[in-house]
Amino acid sequence: MGKAKSEHKKLGWEILKLQAKVGEATSKTARKIVEAEKKKAAASTEDTSADGIDEVAAAQLLKLKAVKISQKIYHAKKEIKKAYVKAKSSEIQRLNKRLKEAKKSIESNKEEIKKDEATKPNNKKVLTHEDIQKFEHELDLVKKLDMDRLSEHTFIAKLSKHPILGSHSLMAPYVVNKDQDKSASEATTSSTTSKSSQESLNQIIEARLTNTKPVKEHLSKLWDSLEHIVTGRKVDHKELDKKRKASETSEEQPQVWHMLAI
Image (cartoon, helix red, strand yellow):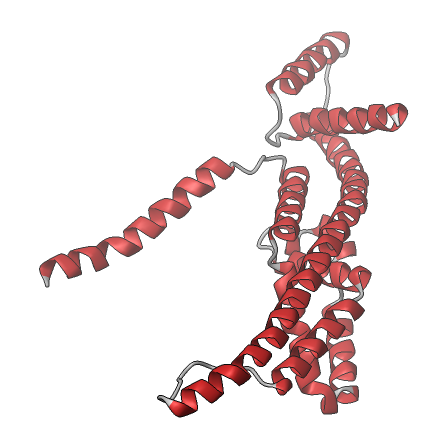
């Protein structure tokens, strides 16, 4: 474990130094060390081709970035799957509770209906045994969900749509081929036409799990880490939050003035 951590730090440091050589944003410490190395090399040789050094450094940097990206994705996928498993467990508990409450509600509604018939109509939605069957079916679908398939599908889908990572050459091995994805989708559609409603319900459940806080946080953390590796720039969340809040304020302001005018 200690050796692996040491190797990971070493890889990160080598990437920082190479980023400084090719002019990517990096730490001040790395830049100072690289500048010192350049001065030392210039003093020991009559002439050095800066362009040649940059090309070699750039090629080496891409190789090391690819290694680090592979390591990052490997470990992140494990954490994303754990988050999905946790979300699935919570969803099962939620549905079980809902099912139990629905059954109890049906029993209590029988007595209320008798009382209401003698007095006045009741507009409250009354649950039926069909609702119970629907809840049980949904619970069964959740229990059968494949977390490996779902976490992998989400990773590829979200990565493909990412504005920076989705089209970057370093991420190409992890983005599914569009033609393959299209043919797989067509095959799935043709074989499950009779199960369209069930497929639709499956998609709703999967989206519900994907939108849970643990899954969203792990995905966001992964994209930030990968973007930092690829571009050499850290994602400034404080600055992004400021821009988001400023945008929301500017959108809400006209509505406020309109209300005041009225």
